[in-house]
Image (cartoon, rainbow, N blue to C red):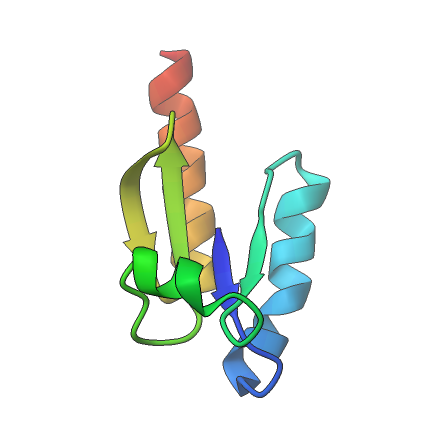
Length: 82
C-alpha cells in the first residue's frame, strides 16, 4: 500500500517509480490519507509517503522511500520463489 496525499511533494515525485513497479506486475494500492484517514490511522501512518508491504493481510515491511520499496519487493519475491 502506498499512503500518499495530493499536497505531499515527495508523494507526487514518487508516482513515476510506483508506475514502473506496477508495469513490472506489482500490485500497489494507493491510499490518499485525506480521503481515507481511517486507513492511515489503522496502519499508524505518521509520515508521508509511507509504503506498507503485506503478505496475506499481515504487514511484513514498511518504508518511506520508494527506492527501498522496490528493493524490498524484489527481495520478498525472491524469498517466495526460493
